[in-house]
Length: 172
Image (cartoon, rainbow, N blue to C red; front, side):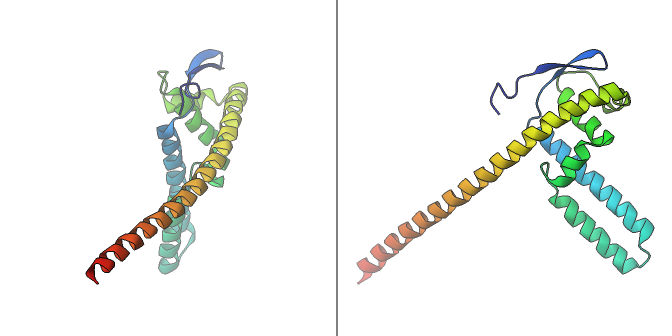
């Protein structure tokens, strides 16, 4: 991330000034892992409570863990949780924790106030817009890398064919 994108900015929540820095890769990974863990925890609890047949419960638990492992920071589960009070608190904490002495519990208490929650949701909306543009950039990057990989593979195969021809030509 370039210096301008990572530059801290001043935000006001609940009448107090904080320094907020856009999430870095570590921040996105922490949020993604949190979403995955939350999804798994809820799914496993539901499987335990609502599925009586042990085989069905075990299969559902496997399915939940498999699905949880595939959740990404830009996926619909993450985007949905961003707009929940719990998800907003986690995100706001991740935005603030690098430059401020604040805990997740303190952030959650701040967001109980409707005005502060609205301020935080504005921050989340901006982050969601950034994440959607980041997702589009990542997809474009993956497509370009895939194309480059195909081209590199073709070049490698052509080089191997040439070397093979040279070796076999020398033997004859």
